[in-house]
Image 1 (tube, one colour):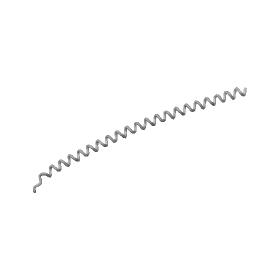
Image 2 (cartoon, helix red, strand yellow):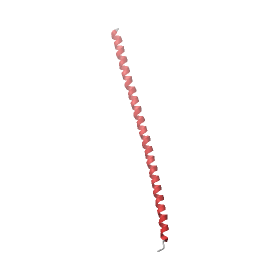
Image 3 (tube, helix red, strand yellow):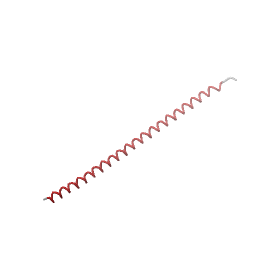
Length: 80
């Protein structure tokens, strides 16, 4: 009877350890996938922010050049 009980206990222990490993592995895999997805989303957002900043900088440069051109056109009428 002791052998049957010990065998059953050992089998139950092995099954529980095996079950925990699978659960831990699944959770780790899910966490890694979630982290990868978060990283991808953050990189996309950063790329969009950089692109928007570059467009705004380009627009500001164009406006500055246009303003300078207008100011330079006004200086051609100076009497000597």
